[in-house]
Image 1 (cartoon, rainbow, N blue to C red):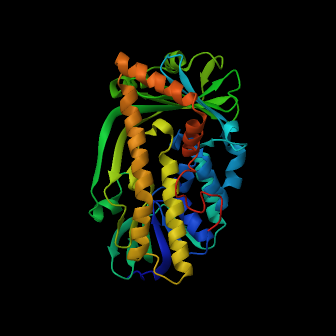
Image 2: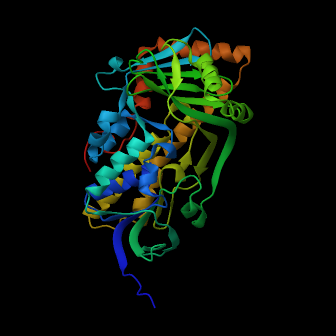
Image 3: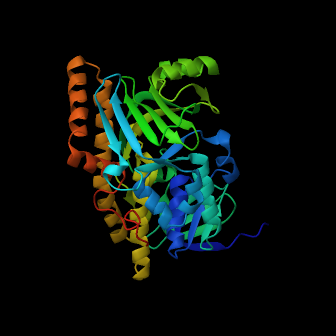
Length: 408
């Protein structure tokens, strides 16, 4: 008879070791909490190029979080600053232009390849004695009680934690097991994602063209490269993906334009269906939902992961402060404060991204004229434009300490 492994006690158990889960684990372990992160995936596979062709737009506020928990130093050499953003409505001559120099010297954000972001997180995680990463490993069962949560893992280990963070994605088993309902919609759009090389430098300029089928974004990467997030209706996306590389590049170039010279594909193509999903509650006894487990929004403004980072910064601040005061980090008061703190930010961004997507999908001439005049008006309103720029940077509102550039 096999000997049963001893129970491991930790302050925080994080289920899901992706970009959000590992960031949360690092934030809390860096501040002295004992943390276990459990992830189904093999870490080596998640850092390989074929795993994920996406990039992440790291807003300035999120970069401050990554710097505050000791991760940014691993990412900085691979991060491309976003110095300007140009927003246009199709082929309209009217546009909105953001320039970081209108606010100071800091970039508006950065573009980092997902696999490199994962690599930097793992480099930092390995240096933390208080963080135990169990991967690949599955949570077989979870039991919640008034005093703690017990997780039984596929490797035979049992974890007992004061708090469980559900970072297990949009289909979160933890959320479903807790009976937390969701609401949302299928956008009936597919995002095509790829990387292109171009002849001319992009100078750190990000471009977003709003089209009736969805936004077409050009995001600056290191070198003469750009990440493309190209939204189409599902049938059109399927047709485009079936093209060979030469034909696909020609279709892409028609939408990209010739301002950066000749284009060539750099790597594979990926596709992702787009939807909206919001949890009706972000907490349950001994459980806090974080990132995609709590909210999945349209990528129209590149803010999905940044919204999750603010979840992380808020939850980490609350549990670390509670621990230092000798309080129960998984108790009802901590969870209620987390729910209250995050709800307004989440619902505001849901309304903005969903509203923009629906507005720009309407190609009726009167609506298009109103949109274009609105973009031009904002472009000519310096105070409003600076506020919107700060919002895009993630530095507006009741921000956690890490977002403000402070430490926990």
